[in-house]
Length: 299
Image 1 (cartoon, helix red, strand yellow):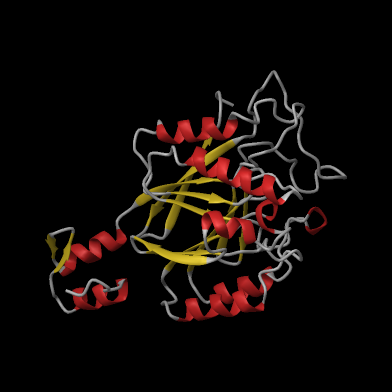
Image 2 (image 1 turned 90 degrees about the horizontal axis):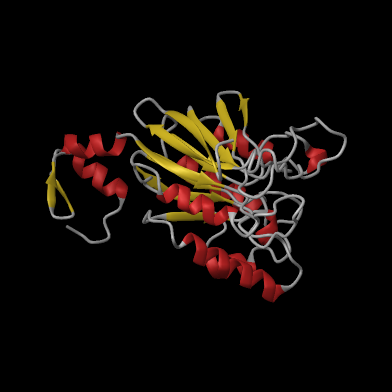
């Protein structure tokens, strides 16, 4: 068997009834199909803002990311992978400090026990240099990967300072979607919301509607994002959008106050509003169960 056989080649062989070998074990066509659709779960963390310093907002700013890593490591069953949906570090104009923060973040999350960790940038990581430093540490700004029957699409809506995906990336997305079936299970991972949640607060993507239009022909699409530092759920047609909490500070509900501002730390309720989530993927039914976990003490 060729060493460079890709997923489509494998499925084609399986459809022909040919046994395939995975890690030295023979799998029948039926076993391959079952493995392609078996359930699994992964962890989403977002908006860690490593390098932030504001005692009134988070007096434990040097500790919450480490607490989140420890909490994930302590889960009874380890996730199949962990994904960070942007704003890994706090923005800075200093190029050296930017890279120092990314190196420190990388070293901290390297303590995760899970074998696979995936990243994407937030505007704090990428908007000032169009992702130059981010790519040195974490690789591509946008990419895809497949896991047990789900096609994951990682979109970059932050490296362009106008908060756009851009024509080039949009064409890349359209070409990628054209190559998969309309009933395929798709999860889009991005930083900013793709819909106009609160444009005045920078809670939108300038050309997000074009991205949604490209996704609409596909019947099983879910979007997981960050940026707004709170749990939030929204539907655009049949596409579900779910925002994640931050591990650094909480933000108010969209439009609930005249001006967006960080919610101050409350000593009576430490770590309130901070957390991460498990996403359990029921692949065969194309459903996703989201379970929220606190960063520190019970909220």
